[in-house]
Length: 86
Image 1 (cartoon, rainbow, N blue to C red):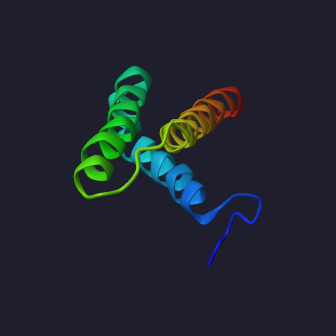
Image 2: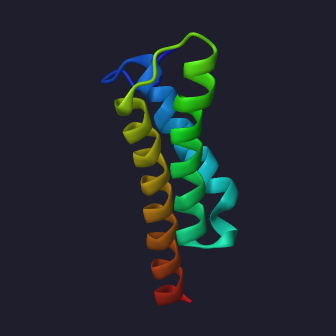
Image 3: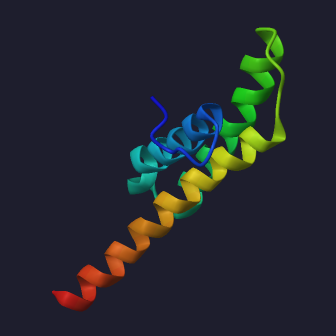
């Protein structure tokens, strides 16, 4: 089931994967989290795709990173709003 109808399922999975990785590592800080997301995105394309017969794709890397950036941005927005309200 493609929950993001405006993009192919492969790209949607990369977007959600990057967001999930960022959400898991956000307590470590923004820089570390984005570093982990970037490392995971590049590592997946190089290691998994290259050595399992897949085709590495720079677009997959960028969409994975975008998912992480979105989650980090939303986390920061919620932090600012919560500090303003409480």
